[in-house]
Image (cartoon, rainbow, N blue to C red):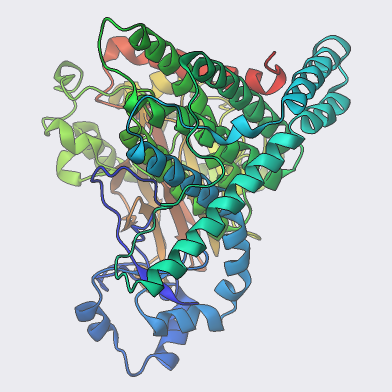
Length: 601
């Protein structure tokens, strides 16, 4: 496929775009401007040696400043055509490209609709309201929509006829879906017409905006009609979101994503329209805008997060990458749509379910742990020079911990009470979905020391020295585990096992790995990627990182890898806010589940 160059920027632009800051080539696994010290896919490496004799790694290092992106799927990135040939020849992208292009279409639709709204807003010269795409709903269809929704809400709430009610909700939203498709078709046709006209005019500008008006153009309606349309739009967005929940739970993924695209488009149009509203504090419009913000922000956050999850839960690692596009668009939409929406996400590669409020001024909680600048503790992977003092203490006693680990392994081979369990097997509450990210045929097991699933027999025969060290040395890890927000485990990764890219559930904690059994470097690659950097464990050394950032693990050796894994309170989370943030994270999680079972009226 042809490719186009692009790069990610944090600059504020009045537009929505897809994520483009890909740091590793899909063909060879190398970053755009560095070839040393990074994980290279073994199969790709062999292919490159055969196919790219004319383009050496050294030449690539000198000539490539950024990766080029596949124009069709927008998710595969390459140094050059040689790397693209490698990926295509191996059959990986050949099989994935069409699937990725289809999966990303709802995002393309959101962008196209937003661009159309942006062009209308730019050309608006007075307070005449722009006619929104959902205003095209026929009055009779609108009446039928309200009637059907109410009838099926009764079936759902009072009679428990969930499947029948769900089918009714889908029928009610049928005309909305048709209008949305027509809306996107019109935009697409307009865009194609503009491209033809631009070619005729020999216009060299690469304008991706949608500049022409369609039949959904300016209408001279009064404020009452505007408020009525806004109210209906918000209610419609709520119902689209609920239907998307139900369809996702029922395995109707494509339909769910389309509903989410419609929901997000409606809410973004409300946000963008606010940019052209009067800013006079005495105007009643200001109060209405504040009310809208309190409604739109949680709705948009829920819709964006549901769309993120719909991609993160895919089996294909390539499709899961689309979650970056969604998070990037969510962040952009917060920056570019006025004051009505505030996105909780800050980085496309940091997508936890709950973002705690960290405070770099919380030095009082840190002075006994670390004297490092607070900003160092906000990095995805904390550099060793910024490690708290307990890291050094663990490193000094790593052999004691390793000996007790070996005793547990030996006891497990002879005891019928085996406590090494598969991660995410459901035997304990936390980490219940972790099995989703284990590669096919791989094995990832754990032995719980503290937290849900730990032994209740005390320290007698269960790594007593290790537990005593941890209690005395790292009380924050024990406190978090006993609060249900983390765990302390021995984590064992079998040979030839990969943990696919994923994000942890919250940033209110840090994760530490103490290397205990680490494959020799000559045995092959056994690394972890945290955000955009690969790191290798060292025996007896601590790695400290924020697992709310995207991370993945590759053990491509024939040896096992075992680390002591600890979760501990983030040092920049003030002590008096710990339990509040943890309770809020739990409340949000429960609320997100409850929303899936209560249809809006």
